[in-house]
Length: 391
Image 1 (cartoon, rainbow, N blue to C red):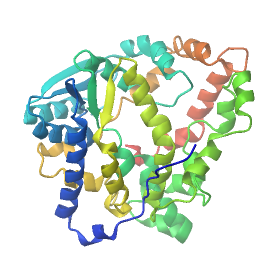
Image 2: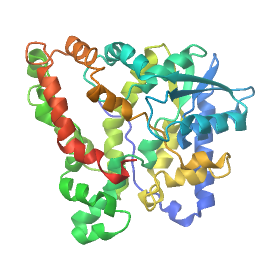
Image 3: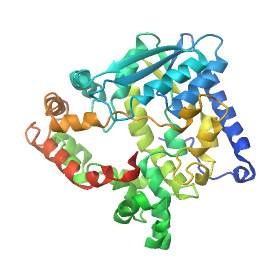
Image 4: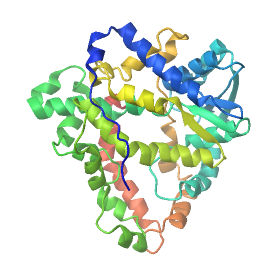
């Protein structure tokens, strides 16, 4: 197989000569064209709408480009399932819908329905997978009305949002200047984490953010699969993804490395599998080739400013009300994960479905899987979860 195109993350000096208004106009113009291209369809198109900036901006642009009224879809959670503040997603999604006159649909999800559908979700994953499950339920809702939908996928990965993106500049500064670099106010919350995982080798510190270590993952493999993969490891694959970067700053270096492997192999994979479980085609304007190349050319200092993630994208959204959603992100309820471990409600179907799909080494039992999950919850992952700036 031969690579015919590779995204280059070399910074364009033109960004340094623009003010914020010019930057925003350039980003919005490129995204608008990406949305316009994805509106071409023989069937009606719907829109994922979380209430965060990514899907809201995409929806806003689509509303101005579509000749008719567009349909938007939001997933909400019952009070027993959600994280404090999560209910705000529905309010802001409704505000965007009202502002642009969309035909809005919502579905309220409970932990009970999540647990009931979990074996089916595992079936569609078809392999051990570290991915979120909410697209399964939202795609099911959308597929009842339309067969094509636009999402906000790709914005986080192009403009910086996750923990790995937020700590990349701190790690680079620590490796260059030593501990005194972490005295800066926006590095301080992650000081202990940075000191623990910093490493100059390509991709090595990023691998240390994984919940499962290599030996823990191998403990889950069936004998035949273990023999097939041999000594191959995800750490080695990550090192390849991070080798020879074209980026010139710490943030874009980690964005580039993740864009080569983690993004297509995990994020896009689980979105595709869980949407196609309902025969729903998902598109995203953020992955328009021209827009991706534009975003990759933006220096990292304009993407995360003093801890403000996706800064340039939020500023690009400035002319589009309602104002508040520009500062919002979106995530699924953390309390669901706690319920899985604390209440025991997820034991059946979780281990049963897990062992049925991917037998563990211990004769198809869940011993190794349970041990690995327990170690992950009490090992390095617990320290990552306690980091103040995870949210």
